[in-house]
Length: 305
Image (tube, rainbow, N blue to C red):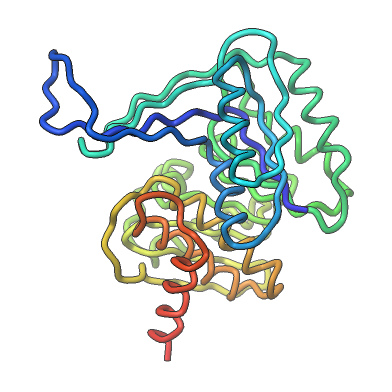
């Protein structure tokens, strides 16, 4: 089973407002409510690709109830651990105003919630995969992901971490199966600017030297690079297509990689399906479905010939 963890899930209120005027009352032309959070996005795309997952999350209040209900409506199994106080966050996204967003902070997470989550993860074992993705509430330490990996040592769980800064670097000593920063996040770790795929490779290898088994780096319009545990390095340009929505593309890449890996157990196949899934979402209004992903993947294979 694949498990995803979202420590700060959201209810995303996505609106378009024509002729937006600052300081005036504006009315929406379209609106949509969707469950959000990187781990949840991974579960959604994996479901679209035919893989069952369990979406674990920390939630609170009526907003947390709404998030969980919307995830269930998508046919995804949920195990949300509830806080007694506060509300999960609502993120406002103005999709036609240069990607402007106003994201909530989320509730204060209790020690009891964290303990319940860790006890639940203690039950994972050989054959399971765990995705730890996204930001965390302010009340949690940046060692939360590393403490989860530490407890899982010896349980043969393939752990994927998609996070930034110390959240990511703290886990490396526990040898995660895959880490997936983007090029900007990777550059921030090493205080460099990384603009080309070739520039990314040596720094991705440094993450391996620090403990990661496999490193996948997304680069938006520049494509992606992959450094595998077997020593192979793959550089892939971005597939051609019209950018519609970049939100969730990185999460889709993680989902595509896992789908490719568990289908083929081949790292190159996993990487290329990951690139296809990330690109397909970028070309769609929302998270990509199976048909969109396979269309991009097949076009990539044709390009290679």
